[in-house]
Length: 226
Image (cartoon, rainbow, N blue to C red; front, side, top):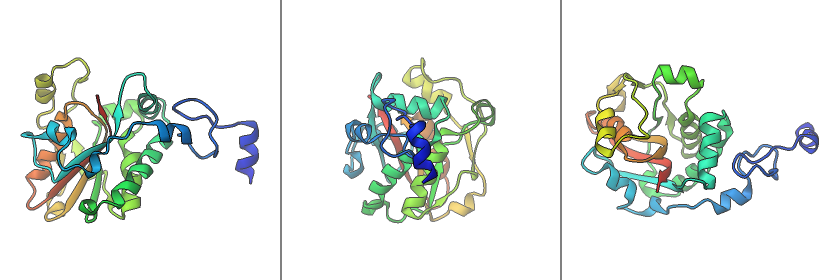
């Protein structure tokens, strides 16, 4: 009741379109939820995300939920999550994606959900990892273990933005280390990132799990750059 009264005087705006949201606890309004372009890759065996990872690592399945285009709503929401500290956007992305994954049979036996880790130096500057809230909410919905502390980023990488595909791949070689690999033997892990471009960083993380005995790797990102 108190929250509803406060929202009358201090309405919360959508992190995407900046218009007031219908419910004060939402960070993404219903209009943006409907209009954001979904990829439909979840049900596709071969899709552009899996193609990006082909030859770099072994994955059971990989997909992105939305298309990421400059100047569009998904970019606005990602900016709010990554640079403005609106982690509630990540919560809601995780809830949306988790509900869809829960209905997909191939994802029914995920044991661990792991966010792509930031290097400690970058996390200190930003104050948080934007992937944490996404992964935590996916894990809660599919009843898997949220495991953010079992992978460490051992090398900081330069910005990938202006690098070529080959340079991005070289920049992402051996930058992660799994703590207690035995914990993941014979298990299925879902690796989570916000946006995939070339797939080099995610492939580097997946390679570490490929070296664990009988560990199956799945990958999901909120969006794919198109």
